[in-house]
Length: 341
Image (cartoon, rainbow, N blue to C red; front, side, top):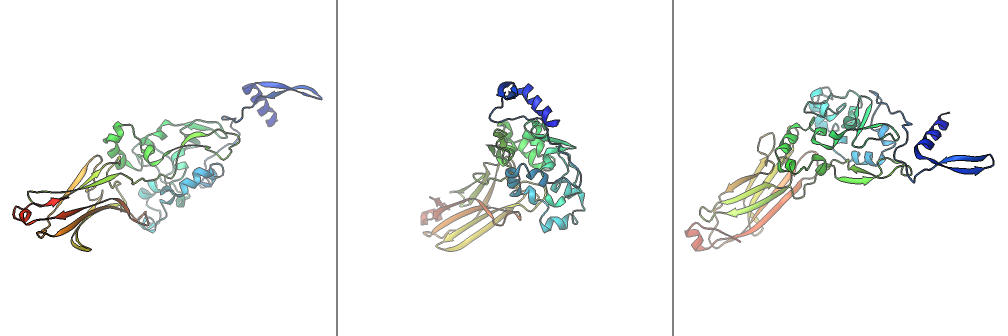
């Protein structure tokens, strides 16, 4: 009976032609190559204690594979988090590391009490109650309600309040460069695994990647009046402070050194973090001054590196590095001048 009703609905929706058979002419629906909106034939339910990422993986394997590579999927895996959250009992931590559903405002989400080990899951962003949300509304194969907030910072602010507030006063906000444009790059693809039924759609990557390229720039300058060497670190490509985030151990290290041949004769290191309120602000910079007594006539190499460090990464990320030769003459020394070529 269901198949008959489905066929009848398709005929009414798509129109039909007639096919000659031994029993006479029968209507045949005109089917396009691919159907974007089938009637909702799968009843997707969201049940506490049952629903998890496997229920999404069965039809959205490509997106699931991307999510598995993300920090969202590993948000509850570290021993440090287990300890700090008292083995997942402190809801203040679990609310963002394993949220139940999106709020789309600055209030923290509710902590999930089931499948906490799965971290920030599909449902943490895409399910409210029994309603599945997406940037595209659809009936195929289950009802998905269109939610424009998923395209904006409101999809992120519940757990990333400080970072979003930094973005809101940035040039990125003025240029309408959203969180998603940097951390969920655009893709056009089949959203579900049923390629023969559906067309490709506008989508975004779900690795929630962090692109460190061109986010920070170092500059060196020597004062000819005082001999001080100036190191300037500028936030040139991030829509928030570097580093950002209220919690965690992310830090930016600025290494400044002077080499004579292969030997380091002068070294300083700066540690910048959000917790210490020393992070480089969005669209801003920080400047550090160093006094190095160069011997007249000697040749040196001045080197600086910016290194991002976090327990989330197995290796440090070098954001920028710069080096320039430094040479003094007798006259420069007498007049306290340095020449930086």
